[in-house]
Length: 365
Image 1 (tube, rainbow, N blue to C red):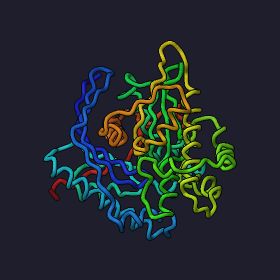
Image 2: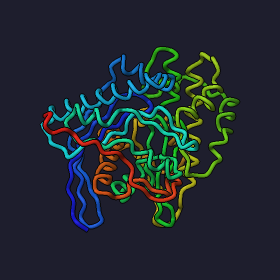
Image 3: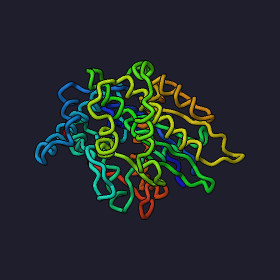
Image 4: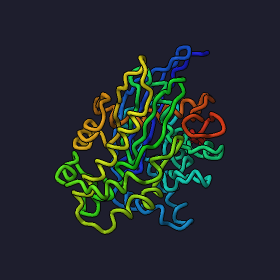
């Protein structure tokens, strides 16, 4: 197998809408072993107007949603161009997650906006995007997407990879060395929805939740939601939150109590997922935690109190940029024609190569 060295930019824009993560990373393959080294990373906040448009994107008519797809692609392309100029770099391409508007794989439907053609046109870089659609077309969930990176880049260091973004998702190798991964429960998308009821973008450090009192009746209703008894592969989208979670809160204004209850619910579900993993002599059960939820100190306390597994919080760069790093890696695999989506994770008919490539017009530089 030929050795490889590729430098790429990963762009991560999650459902929690807490900013756009850009990272420049160098990937190397020697034989069958991959390694990586992050070089530069930056989190870009959303301008208020773009933030509001994305928040309500699922409510738009077809024409307005198509326009947002274009405008968001131009916005992301502008961030990439600024990033490249700031760090004076020449990556091979940019790989973009996009913003998920709809995700109902049981209907064959998934939509991530952020036009790859416009990212390429504005940034001047070849762009890879739309990583989910092929897998969904093959009968899979199209999510989670990061487990191939968890396995090849992080697997030798950690048994579990837990990401606390808009949704909490986990990946690990089972006893047969097959990667298992799925969305456990909604995370920041619910917490942020609650805090926005009182004019705050998020619950900093979980301090609001810490002040609350757990509503045991509500907690029991949350834990009884049928999704949690389903076996993987499975994935979640905004539609699940709107249909199953938010109606249980009603119009309640005791946000601190709702947050406290939801944190206990999420900690319980995540601990169940962790504790259900393989338990043999080669499996230590150590868990790396990344994503914005890793900064929620109170939630991390709840999680540690719910499981005996070792919870590892890496340095800030890895917390912030792990998903962007892996999306850059997904782009590398797509570029090389190597499967980047695993059937054991998504339930698709086969491992597949996801991602559409848009070539930049170099003469526009």
